[in-house]
Image (cartoon, rainbow, N blue to C red; front, top):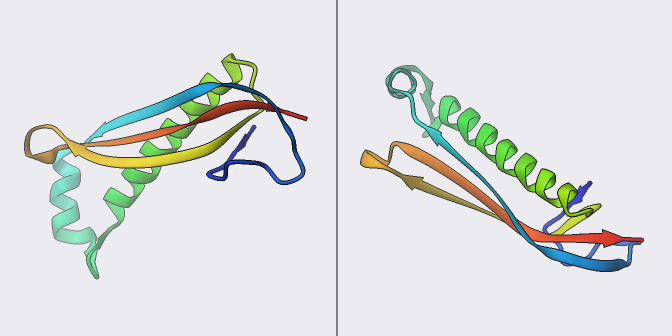
Length: 106
């Protein structure tokens, strides 16, 4: 499955537009991760704990997008947009949402 932020795929012709699809992932911030991020992982303004969680959430959302595309019979998703939000009480949740257009190419 080709997943791309571009509106087309070089060398491929879009035969059918199958619809706009989405994938989402919401991850909660763990209290112990917060504690260790504050004490140990903050180096130069970066937190490896949060970076790993962000990577994991993005992977989950993209996997969901791919599964929804496959269910429609798509072989690619074009025009993918990735958005990040913090949610919940005290911004304790991280949401990654992805959207794009499922297509069939030749």
